[in-house]
Image (cartoon, rainbow, N blue to C red; front, side, top):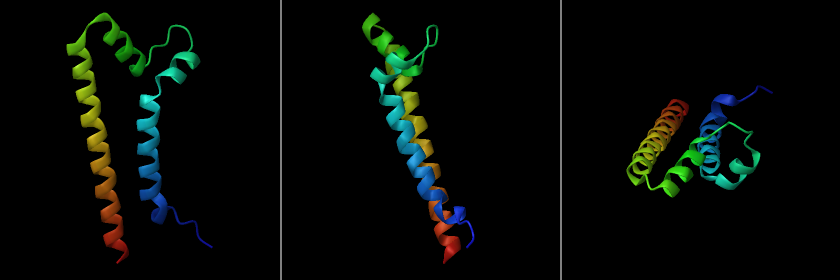
Amino acid sequence: MRYQLPLRWPALAAAWLVALATAMAELSATQSAAPPGVTTLSMRIFDRLHTGADDQVAGICLVLVALFGLLAAAVLWFARRGASKME
């Protein structure tokens, strides 16, 4: 029985994308598990929201939305490309 990663990679890529989106949104776990001196992106957004830097938060969030959109488009493109090769 051969290992069938080429057949499974679209599902793995989609699962990775969902896990990344969930991890980016999980602030409470990040704040409790982050070592001293380490600041993650979600912590920076939270700090900027409370200091009144709304324009910076909007810019960061716009970049994140664009990044996730590009990642989702790439996963979809690769999945369709892989499905067309199987036919």
